[in-house]
Image 1 (cartoon, rainbow, N blue to C red):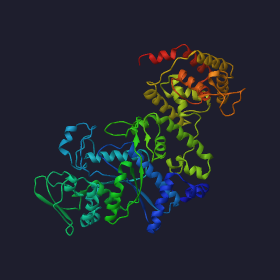
Image 2: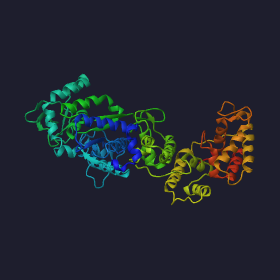
Image 3: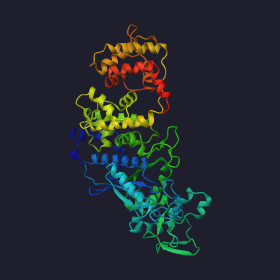
Length: 556
């Protein structure tokens, strides 16, 4: 993104932008100023990936958030400083346990502790190793979302000698590295610890063994191999790798990484990474620590537990942009990641997108959609919300989005799936989300006598409304009916008078629970306008006859 690509109003507002990606980008600019780096300097952003498993929702979040900082940096520097995003795969790590999702777990047992790129591919196909397969899945995953990045393989970097210079420096400064690492370990681990992990010439496994000799002059290490014999290996050429904590710092030093973000589980280790990087002659990058996700019960999400949402589950029910919004919002706050957050994220994204054209420069730059779309949000203002579509599915028992389009076209003439692809996509998401997640949980309740009388009064009032009544007209009718019922009167509401009280939320809660089987919902006037007055009156009649309760009780 170049400065020229920015609207003049946005360019003028850059100094006032306060969204967190801009704050992180400013830290990077200060870093360059401190280093007295010229404009020919390329700023390197990095993200890490552990290919022991397939890419997941956390992988998306890390790359998406890093990309947001990168775009903010390019905007602040006017595109005058080159940037790169390197997605680095730690595919030389030993396979410490066999994943649950492979076709034949017994097939992989002989390959435990071997580098992931030396483990045969259990999935078959064109990829020679398990690591290569998962790396390909990562690249396909990132390409699907349109990320601009470069891929890097630890195996390739080690074997090609791209780390050799810094690895030889690690041999020379072995004592300094051990001085950092040993205090972080227990007594038993201290006795056997080495930052170097040789690849056994006999078995090909990654060995966690103590060093018998570290020869700085020769650039070699000596250790006992699996057969008990002493072996001396050069640390170069991919014969040796580093333990993961020193490896972090080594990679930063070797590649000149300027920015990397990671989860809170790395926070206590960050000073170790920094010290190793500095010992090896590098300058530690700026880093940003984000909070980890929680499930609906407030427990940390774990791949082994299978709690929380997968990215495939999110994308079954909502767009990647809504997921990017969820990642943008408060990265340093622990957030629950489960099905119920999806509708809210979808509608918040649509609201921010619709509001963007009307905002001033600073507000646009702080709007999440500017960051989600790399500074170029599409024009989109939808006539309905996702929450409203969900309730329309519930009321109409729609099993296909074409049913929803029948209502949409009637209320918004001229709209069509072809003319409004975003709305068409939203309708499809709504049907799937309702069918798979809401339908089995929703429970209507019976109306008590007062509620029955109020709903009958609402139906009678709707019968007198003109066919072309607007959503606001219908909302006024709903308020007027509720205002006449003592239990729903709210004299403390803003603008309420003794003669004209406000209406409490209890009235709308009754409507949602009795008619839609939900505890909350959209503005009901908007719902009626879309669903139709005759259809809404029929829904009220069905509820009061007990038919909706009977449907809940019927076997699936």
